[in-house]
Length: 223
Image 1 (spheres, one colour):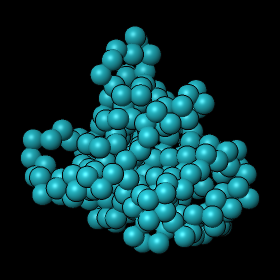
Image 2 (image 1 turned 90 degrees about the horizontal axis):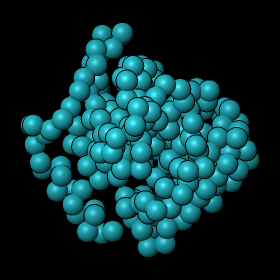
Image 3 (image 1 turned 30 degrees about the horizontal axis):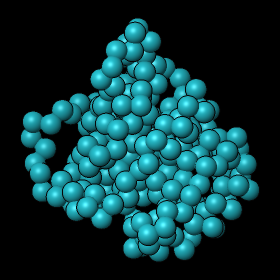
Image 4 (image 1 turned 90 degrees about the vertical axis):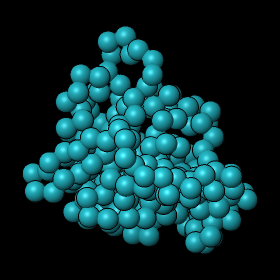
């Protein structure tokens, strides 16, 4: 997994020229760019369910490309259409960006190969916390949450997530000390009544590779 970290850091040096990006002009005058990963197999006429996978930190283009390259395409191989938004203001996908992500979801779901309805929200670090925020503010629009990792620092309105499937992973050797807050986060989510699949990954840092077989098993429970 340390090798994965080095690869992710190297991606920051790679220009995005020529990479597949789309953009959406938002109702508030801002523009949001995004990557879209689709399954390579034929859906046989059935549209793919939609997932939004948000990067950490500022959610800028290099960070979002990391997510697209190392995570979104893996998730797409499991039968999901995956949108990776690029923050329009170099801030995480919280606050005003919540409604911008929701508007992006609505636009992507107009595609013939993308299903309408509830969305899987996924995120890394600040992106995982954004997934939790969007879901607790608009739970009727969310199918499930993948927080890999995320913390719960604000329990306001957390009970709106009651019954929501949540896949949580945090590294025990997290450089930011998130591993030490794992139990607190699990307790808050359990008290909120979510359907929690949580694990502290021993020896793993803040960013880590996912066990896609485990993810696939969890995703089957959502369908």
